[in-house]
Length: 193
Length: 348
Image 1 (spheres, chains in turn purple, orange):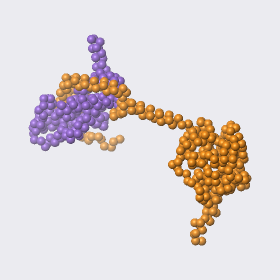
Image 2 (cartoon, rainbow over the protein chains, first blue to last red; image 1 turned 45 degrees about the vertical axis):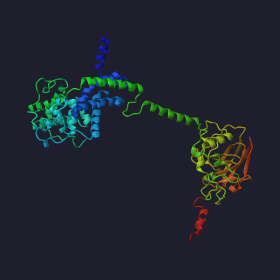
Image 3 (cartoon, rainbow over the protein chains, first blue to last red; image 1 turned 90 degrees about the vertical axis):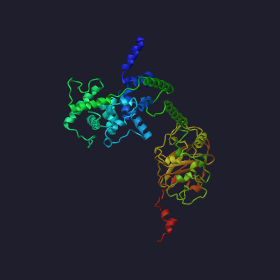
Image 4 (cartoon, helix red, strand yellow; image 1 turned 60 degrees about the vertical axis):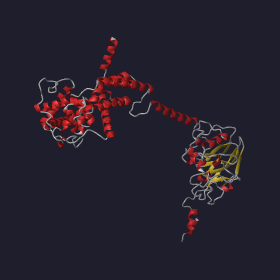
């Protein structure tokens, strides 16, 4: 019993690269550990981008199913989370293109005051999303992606800059500007003091 | 260098400093520290406006977690599928969208099999396909050699019969390219000329029957070393000379077999000497050289045009001497062309 607990603890401390290598050799448990480690981040990223809890759960599973098939093609196992986020991004874009539907991007200025709050879905999980999270869709695609990668997925700025194809300093400026715009939207709608 | 910055740099210096400081603070979000404190310092570092942005970031960070039970179920499902996939695909080559390993293995085995089949045909038994002629193509008929001779004719051989006389013999049958059959030719020649299987260069063997085109196509100028004398071979030797008695190097001496398929070709040496080892049989002997009109061995032991070619009968272990005298080729600007029918019709 103690041996099993030690083994589980050791596995949980193993690096992503070690777990990826084990999974590549066919260790299903290593893949399960990778899922347990990164699934919440993938879910949060998808939830923040879609504001749809059910879709985020479904796509999270899709992401790991795709990762299962493509794990051998992962070049840098240490960047596993960034790689998973790229898959998640593509899955979400594919979903939107298939459905030909994506969250409304009507400029907030065109909406009457309080309309954004009235648009909020009343599902149990979505209702727990912060106002800022729900208003994220009003930002540009690039700003949404950066903030989701930064605050939902928790990627370091270096990896975010690499994914966005810009320098780290530029990504920091974009982050600052996006947060400022988001705050301004909240202030305009009177959702924040 | 990108001449245009990726993003418009419309931040003031203060905002830039705030952005840098905020980023350091945001790192604390993922480590459980309060967002308004620098990770290395305890005191707040952000101005009030930036603190408001930090609160916005914190609100984004405070997303609900996925359902734990559903996550466990998903994990178990993924692990089971992973194990099943790995069992059915023992060696994934990994690349996204890549084919299973057994497909690559099958392709590799197929290529190896093709290579084995290709190597199974010995090089000596499979000369270059472009140089091959079928039995029917190379079978010389007495008095009427095949069209193959025409290809070796000199530039003045306007009628294409190889004798350079400008008159068509009328009985020449063109060789059909589609008739080229490597197996037939090779095996038939092997019956009469058991050339060593390792003889990959047909021109390297003085007795190897090869197409005359291969000689014209750039065979080595120096004659190949002669094989050890074989008692079952009939040897034909002689010289190829011009009308002044000078030896013609690199002349092609061809023995066209009359009573069977095949022909034998050899190049003359620097002094015009040549040596051919033939199987027993009846042959028409021809000599060609660049800049010279082709000539045939006639029945009287001299050189003649094609119509005057005489059959040379060779017995086993026999020998014969056949000399050729080749006249200079007049060439395209030669008298026969200048005075040809087309030219004569032109007004003077």
